[in-house]
Image 1: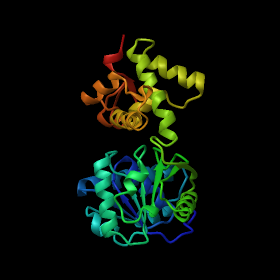
Image 2: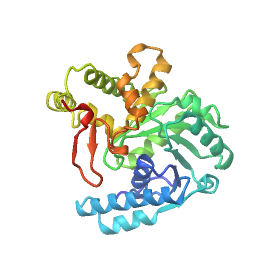
Image 3: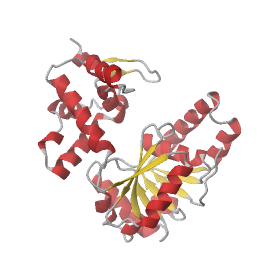
Image 4: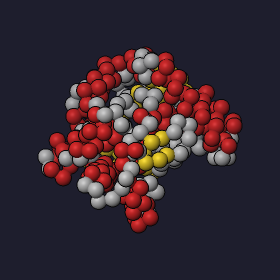
Length: 302
């Protein structure tokens, strides 16, 4: 297993899908990491996911049993932000995509973390500059947008805020490379690159379904078979979370003020009805817990 070339102690805020995935990768590549969430139940669930994912990697011979044990031994958990981040030199926020929550967390980072700590956010759309504005060190704030599932996906979209220093951008690039990732540095505009391009496509697929152009499987199959996408746009929207897709579209709509980013009414209604995709068990498809099986939701069957 490769070892990290730096000496960073890492703190990850959030033990959900992205938080536990980021924790997994840092530990796998030799970084001591603390995973922090609001409850012992949340961090316990996150640790369970990491253990299961690492066990699958051992079974597939991607890592050894010793690698797994060493990585798990590098992970600590905490339910207290103040104590969890106090000795970290790299803090990555991977909490819910909510601006008010992120601003509160970054104010806490300013107060409780080391002065030399890099403050990163895994936000998929929210302004890095706005987040940095509530800290006492905007030059040390940067976006570090991992893709889901983190242990598998190679890209890290690195977003420079208005004040992010060259030194911090270089260091985060080096860290990403030491995780076996491919970093791509972009500037701070709503949606950055990944979601500025992706979300209008997902929204257009939902509009096509809403207008009756084609059914769920037909739309997904056109994009999979005709455009070589590994996953159709409606399935991908379910996988991301329809609530997350809606939140990002609203950031794009607010940021650019253009009607092309307006979320489809069908998407809005589905989120309001609690149909959020894989996380809720139903979106455009219905998902069976513990299984890869899925079928088109009754709501969209002809």
